[in-house]
Length: 491
Image (tube, rainbow, N blue to C red):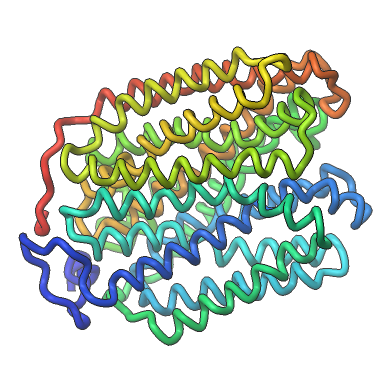
């Protein structure tokens, strides 16, 4: 059995794919909807503890540097496991992957909710992350396999909006819960929803793929863990290093990570000759995959980094509280949803360029405008800049993802989605590190916890100016996208 045959969707109560099929087959909508809802839940959970960190530091009697590991440990786990999702999606049934991953997430959530101290809470978070890692690649791969080519723009716009909306809503949900309830309710409230999704998946989810008899290469696992884990840790430590609080120089783990990733790539090139690659490097032979991937790297650099810096500016520069900041971010999710829904139809008719090119230009302009604001500009100016930036980002996010995965053969979808998600994870860590470092340097103070209003504004302007320069990479990338050709079902 070849890789292509093994990865082909089996005919389970659905009509054969034809050139004229315009709608999802019976049952496919439920599969995609369940995966979207579950992915949204686990990604929302990922962002819940950022706002809660001061409360946890006080309640658990820990230092800020130790408490930060509740987020850093989560990100490290994702960085190590996401590259493995390509193998997992080839080796096991969709239903098995979904139920196993959600079960891990539920166990981790229960442990975190009942944790008596920091150590157990961190363990629960790491188990949560182990379950979370597969959801985004699984959702993207499944949608690409089930959705007719003529409707990929619309459906993938909704699919890719999920990881964009969840980070915007997470702080708002966290702030609302912490205003009235104990921090444990951040996990307790998630449990019944996750359990409902598990029961629904166990009773309604069908297997739609044929597993391949691929073997797990332990050397690849080790190199992935060392390479991607060390790289994310090093990137996440740059911000602390800039303020003089990092335990070791971030250069050391970054170098170790780069060497590990290089060794991982060489190992995959050797393994793919026999079809046993952990992550098939042939995906990078397609310009239509590589260019959108590079654009997404620049989008993720700023997308995640700005979400870290903006609340700092709103707090120190405008005096907003936790709840107000959460409410400030909520409309961004609504804008992303609206733009994604409208943009999906445009993509299906005209391709990515009519969306991505104006989106990139508006995006860089909104970030530059954000870098000019100060404490006298008012919260509405900041909100307007944030909403325009969010909408412009949505004009690029879904088209780039859809274009990249559509350029691959069906048997390479798992590898493509794993690579895309890994790149976003690494870019997010790097973006946070770069913008936090720019923020720290721009403040012209060693202790960011004691910044004046003027220092906070200066720090924010430095970070947003840096983000505007990073955005140039995305603008260049969208102009490098080739001419769009309407796909067919057999393409």
